Length: 89
Image (cartoon, rainbow, N blue to C red):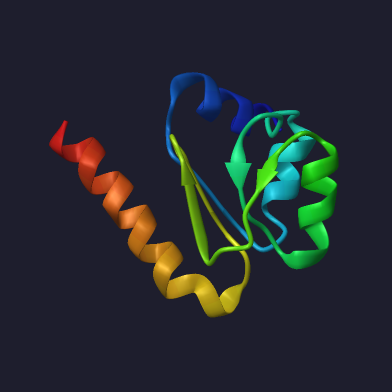
């Protein structure tokens, strides 16, 4: 949890798929953020104040989230795009 909080404070990319966003919730970082997760996790995130979209990939500032293994190609492409933008800067 401290590791994720440190990444958030420094603006480093955070990528989470399936149940991974539960760690963001445990770190109390999801309120007001837009993300996605495995279907059974989505309601928990909403209850914690997150804006949840049922999409293959959701990017919100430094966060890249995805729902499920079937979305991994899109998820991987989104991560590479974010890393490419950071490297260019």
